[in-house]
Length: 482
Image (cartoon, rainbow, N blue to C red; front, side, top):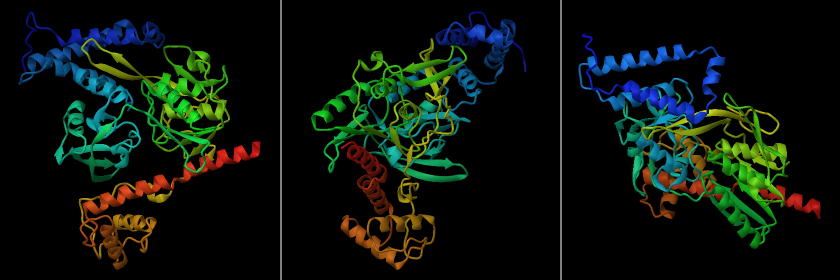
């Protein structure tokens, strides 16, 4: 290996790296250097590390047997630096990736509704899928690793390249090979529009004075949407509210604070923060957040295992500062806050800069928020997707067959919930196929399984035991007041 000197006029990658590191540190706050000096990191040792990085870049640029792309080296260095902190919520986005990330937060796009990050050079689901998105319907989970897209390995590809492959037009399908723990399985997902609108609602069919409000995420317009929905439901007769953040992966801090403040007396704490760069702080309910528009009607909050981050801030504040009942299951457990720092190259760094605590000082990270009223979902709604690439027929014995039998039983068919595809199963599948205008074969093929799973989801929505408990709680509260 020869050690040629750098040619005159060659722009070293070092200049890009140093410039962008300085920009990032200044964007976070001017005290960062003070913090480093307090921990014994001298400016000279930091410079030595940067010099080593520059030397490595020079060696690669001038000594590697093939031509190199300085931009790719730079992006690789930035990604590697962020990856070294081993935080699944911190990542470096190239300019192209940053554009897609902004769309995820603020825009309408067509895809599956899953936020991904790179873990060990493989795309990984980073947050609970967006509520009612194709990814949620496919039961993708945080930590799921994508190995293949449409049968082709994505090893070595950038996150932006993988995202391009996963996204696509509404109605089209994408097949993902997923690794979950030690298990690998295929999932076929039909893409759809992932909407900007994050708030929906209606009046309960049986109890006309109960308004239901679903918040699917906290994006840049959520608090405004929420206010409009509350106004509408009040006009329609609502005198109490069920707020639903089940499946809500979180979002923007200012939005959840504005909404939560409406349920708290001014001065009551919403959330506390701890960080390296700033003193501990506490955010409280105030007119600055809610414009003095308070919601004093009886309210309950629905949560589940996919309620994360901002949703958990709301749950913690409702419990600690408003004595509002929180119903469902333990939440996801994401107790950190990220900020997005723009870089000179058009890229961005999403960096964890704070941890947040409930008003009573509890850090829920990797622990979750416990509901005040625990209501588990039924087992049938918690199964992963059945592998629909296989045909299940008379005599088959496996766990997927047991799930098929369970679904049929829930929908009212006469079957035994076992792992055996029995004559009863075959007869039930034939009846199901005939009822749903499918080819009647008695085999649980891909089309049959897809329709079966869709009907189970619809059945759950009509027999939502957690929502039923929420309504029951409000009715009891109303009765006790009268």
